[in-house]
Length: 211
Length: 363
Image (cartoon, rainbow over all chains, first blue to last red):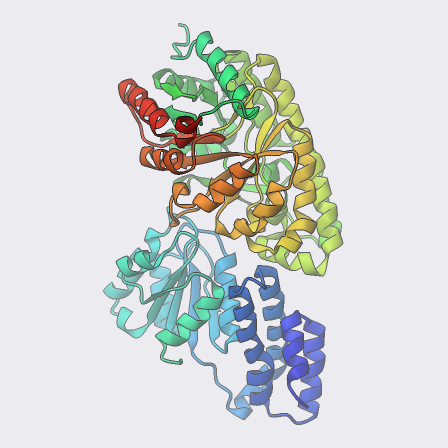
């Protein structure tokens, strides 16, 4: 079975369509990796492209990511036996004092859509809590979200805390959020900055040498 | 002891004359607001504390404001204002959301008191809501204390879908637009109905003072004005805006003479064409957002707004104000200048601005 049906259903955000098509593909003995890469991850690149082009907005990205995740959920029990591995591990969180989560959630979903394993540590996360999460999970990438000018400095505090804990060299740090700029990222010593969720995926791959 | 406000009846007569002319398009200069007092944040972090928001006696709150108003100076087209700042979108609190205060971040946030399926959610006016009673009491207390000396502002009720997002969470509401659009429309209508009741009941308290209406922003009207908003629409397409946001905004604008819209961030620019086509919308406030270039660096946006016959309000530095009048002309703008000036500096600045205004030089 070609992957076009799954691909199209992801783009349309048709969760039921994705689930039905993935089940059919599995019944047809399509390799799990093919379903994952060509049917589920590949359309998320197109979703990101359409978002950057201004054809898709946040709701369209969300329902596409939701549909993709529904398909991945059907494949997950088979990953171990087929040797499918994530591209890398990412921790996502909103900095201390900040309760905004939509940007963080969207980036997390798009990173999952690109094949990363994402651990969401939530909102209002202190620098020390980020340090503990990095120590425990050993991710390749840490994503920090800040939506308020009053909380942005806590991204800098988090980078500082990672350095003091001897962990900064072991993890790449990417920052984002409405008031965040490249200049701010450079100032606090972050490794990367992305303007939106689609660009965050590209940046993550660049930072981890995957593109 | 009397209230020593540095603003006379003659000053008020000038405010009414000039703002009325501005709304009518008869003023060939911009409104320029300079003041030594920030009515939104006067340096007291308590204003977002629960103690301040609910428990402090009305007279004590008004005493603190009065102390600051007495020290304030108002230049250009600024006026003395009491704006009771509970934070953005208190309409959610009025409708029953749990209110959390964050004084250090100078904001509040909301969450639904109970998680229910959207089909079971109903949002209606409750006259006994503790937050609504508090705002009403403070508004009434301010009008009774200051009469026609200080303009008492409408509090920040909030944007329609922003209020709904407080009950659903932003992410879930984004899914709701696709999953249960009719429920979103139903709840939007309920919120708008309640919103208008909040606006009108506050107006009934404020209007007898005879000092027009205003709100958190730098706009005053002799009639009814409000700074509406829909921060949620930053994330949605023009097609979704047309279906889910525009109708309720237009309903609100139909209920007032000088409705204004808080255009917050470049993500809302795709909706600007639609806003400019709203007949009953009188003006747009352009806020580029944190980390973005200042308002004067967006000449196309500014030009589109005033070019469509709408008024435009921005927060600018003195240099930013000069750039706008030099490059676009000041007519139709309300320029809130964030620099603090002495009376002499303010007077000189207003003269410089007038001299540099290409609109006035060519007329």
